[in-house]
Amino acid sequence: MSLDKIDERIVGALIEDARASYATIGALVGLSAPAVKRRVDRLQESGAIRGYTARVDPAALGWTTEAYVELFCRALTSPADIRAAVRRYPEVVGACTVTGEADALLHIQAADVGHFEQVVERIRAEPFTTRTRSVIVMSRLVDRTGGPVPSAAEGDSTR
Image (tube, rainbow, N blue to C red; front, side, top):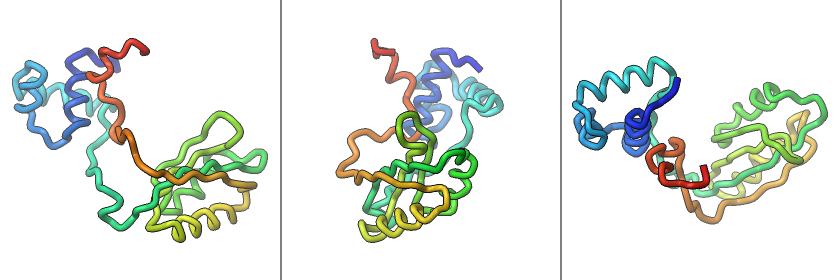
């Protein structure tokens, strides 16, 4: 589905605040609340909007250590095998296959460095893992968990 500029602005508003009323979004994009609702319904039906979620501060839940782990695997390890294994760890909050030397990149949240170390040791024990390389996040500079805000990128000449 192709989004027009108004759809992009609606999506951007929902990324910023998914609980905003249709009237509030309508005021931002120049449409009535019913017109915004129709567009949001269409965006949901098309799959452009996949759902809504609460963004929770991990530190509020006691998870104060954040890290990224490069995962190196034995030959012929499929993405499905990696996915099945890392989904068992609640500390793995994101995972993707990547280009470069590593086979996958894992985003991990843990209570502290000791907890992080335990998680990495369990991942290293997976039969397909040959090695890992980790970096611990010191401070988060940008967090666009919901994705890029389309209206914010309009003036970006690097697109």
